[in-house]
Image (cartoon, rainbow, N blue to C red; front, side, top):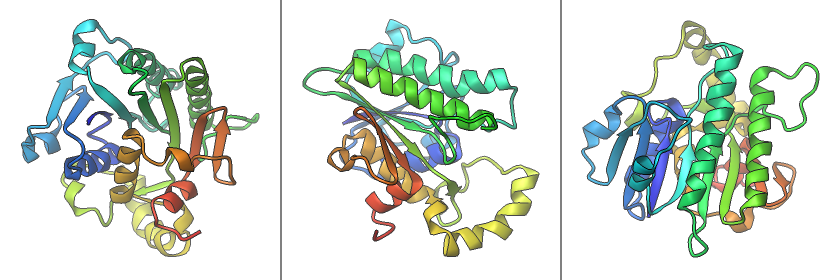
Length: 255
């Protein structure tokens, strides 16, 4: 099985790549990245093909030919709204995602639908209010657009997952590769982390389990379990999984 990954140098993407490497059912991993991926270089896995891609709004025939045969994608590309301007944030979060989604639909077939997993975030909303922050509004708009794409093309199986407190504290394999937290997070993580891991587990998104779960979503698993519930929002056939749904389906929580 051939799966595409973006955001492989980030926190979530590193967890996904580690999971994919460990999955024998995945026979090829195509990584789209602006720069070399150190984890991929170090593991020297022949299944991994890192494609240096500078413009995430364009997908020419040469690039798509390298992705031919892919049956899914984990779209973990993203950035904090505090690191860029509003315009750049919308471009990276929404425009890049939708451009790729449009291009990747050409990889789907009636025999093998394409599974596109959008890594959104806790707090995202498809019904923003007057005071909804940029990230919540933009991610929600992206989800709505993906839902429309899925409605228009039944063999494009888009879905969304909203992790909350993404945490690599217990994921030794990716620690050498994840971004260094900014000063604020370096101060807050040692204070807030233990409380979330122990007392607010519904909000805890450990990278090892999150990586495995999103990779499995891109492989087409769990589809029969995506039904409207308190933590899964269905927009037509398009599921949006809250963090508690991920934890429940991944077996982290019993309920």
